[in-house]
Length: 151
Ligand code: CA2
View 1: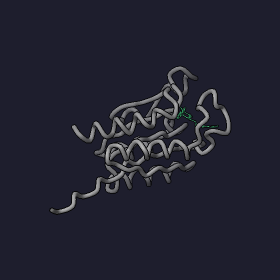
View 2: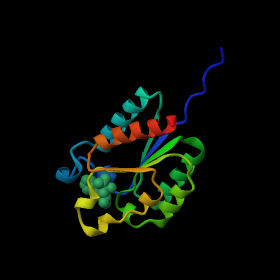
View 3: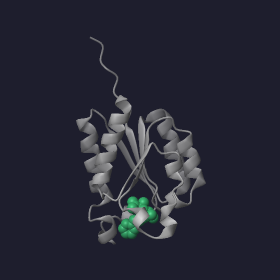
View 4: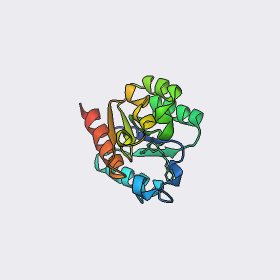
């Protein structure tokens, strides 16, 4: 019997300052480090027969490159663009070029915070948005991508 082709990974892309998770502001972002969140996402993806490519960069252009890479090497995108969520037309345009499901993700609930966090460029291209649920939001986002891929 021919072997079933392995599914492409879900790209989980994290933006500026998220490498600092677990070191400061635990009351806003929780106590988990980004490495721990990466392990949670990978474990959940495995339960769906999927895998993740989990990345973080403080540089907008690098994030654009990874989103573009996801077009051919990934099956879906979970994007926590950090503060670039609220400013970046470049990230919006990169997301618009994707045909895969996109979940915009935030650990905190930006809508309960400062007014400047209440505008999202990413939301205009996202299939859905998960926010305010801390590290568990990444796990739920993996579930959401898996469900959307089955549709
Ligand atoms: O809630 C989220 O996930 C955010 O995307 C996090 C961004 C913020 O600008 C967005 O409005 C909402 C900030 C990430 C900074 O993370 C830090 C973690 C620990 C210490 C300092 C910053």
